[in-house]
Amino acid sequence: MKTVTLPPMVIADLCQQLALFLKAGISLYDGLFLLAEEEQDPQIRSMLTACAQQVEGGSYLSTAFQAAGVFPTHVIGLLQVGEEVGRTEETLQSLSHYYEEQDRMNRQLRNALTYPTVLIFMMLIVIIVLLSKVLPVFDDVYASLGGSLTGIGGSLLALGDLINTSMPYLFALLALIIAGILLFSASPLLRHKAVRLWQHYLGDRGVSRKRNDAKFAQAMAMALNSGVPVEQGILLASSLLEDCPAAVSRCQDCRARLDAGEDLPDALKASGMLPPSACRMLTRGLRAGTADSVMDDIARRLSDEAHDTLEKRVAMIEPALVLITSLLVGAILLSVMLPLMNIMKAIG
Image (cartoon, rainbow, N blue to C red; front, top):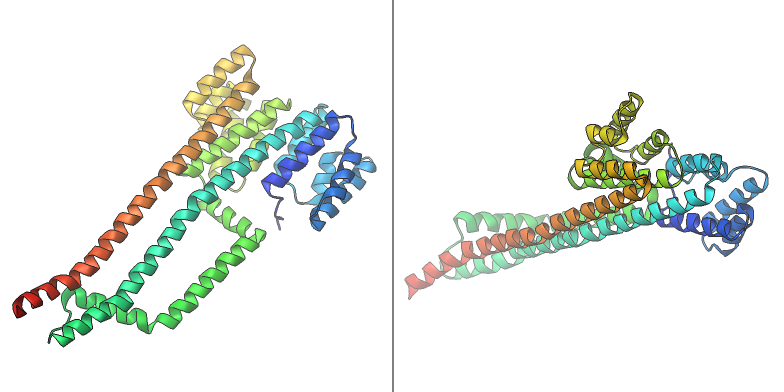
């Protein structure tokens, strides 16, 4: 069974600090032990100590990370290539930048989805209170005037009575939902499985497709900055998208086109891995010998585009929810107020 990997920011901090140790002339063994001594989390401290012992015994850092079982396949694969070409420091630096960006995108996604979710719950509570508590008051007023709620008002009153009758079950359901949310928040394994399920079925559409394109561009920029061959870079990039079969299929198609002799920009465009505008930028970068910096710029633009698209979608949700709730509340009130006004007019 696949284990849950470390959070992106933990990987980013670890790679950044190891890169700084190498730049300062400190060995990976000493660096890992120093990090283990300063680490507060006992599990991470134990993992760092085990990695340091393996490195001390002559193992590569990638081998130690692989044995730890908590690092993504992409980290291990890129480190292996970086160690082979003698660019471990540059590879660690690139990994740090990549996972910092992934952490930023994940936080933006969580923040964007939290507010609409809270708003939906609040609006549901308002409607339930109206149906179960307010409408019976109007029904008593009608009864005192010798009438009763009929039509839409009567149907809503019946729905309110049903809600009142089912209130214990609704509270139990609410308790289950809250428990599920708390369990989801506290369980990395459950979150991982939920994300994988989402990625498998809906992970290559709309905003998710833009995020996948940004992740691929970031992985390719990291590979180019670390001196990894293009074909190997695409293979490593596909490991980041392994939970999304459609994205992996596009990576395989791009790799096959490269093997058939197509240029990198043409292969990326034909396989749908990058937008045409990004491929044109990459063509100019290859001609100028600045493919790595151009790919960095492409990754940044795609990431910003995915974030802007998500913000626009979320910005549309709020007014839509407010409008729908206002219409529902207005319809409920009108369904009981209009007949009451007619009765009062008849009495007057």
